[in-house]
Amino acid sequence: MKHVDLYTDGACSGNPGKGGYGGILMYNGHSKEYSGYDPMTTNNRMELTAVIVGLRMLKEPVEINIYSDSAYTVNAFLEGWIDNWILKGWRTAGKKPVQNVELWQELLELIKPHNVTWVKVKGHADNVYNNRCDALATGEVAKHMADV
Image (cartoon, rainbow, N blue to C red; front, side, top):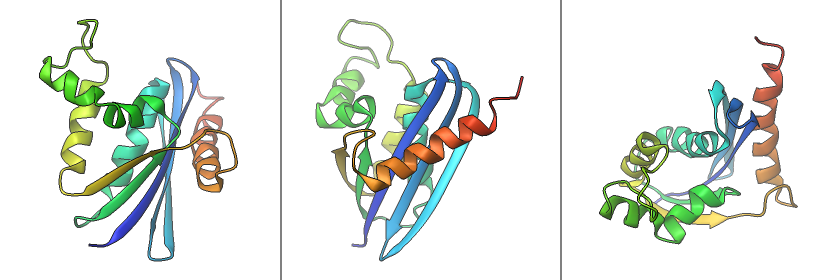
């Protein structure tokens, strides 16, 4: 099975507010950067979208490490939150509806064919790829700051 690394990050100016996401897909010494923008969103939505967009680019099942500084995204899998949400009908431990359900559901569908390892990285630290994803995400927001 082929091995892929995916680094992602999301950003938001205001929460909710103008948001951007960025990612880097790496395979066999090659990398592909991507980014995007949403005029009214949240930081958590951008973090999830960054992962979703990267996964959509995969054309076959792979072994993939997904690196993110988003505790919201990574801990949902590492801490088993998502399993509990599903068991409780997409409700949190506090019995409130899970936010961003449609993104979580899409993400679950997208990871099904893959062997996924989730890796939490420290944000704004010394990880060159996470820092590049941050620059892509914040760059998308900056490009649109003058938009009304």
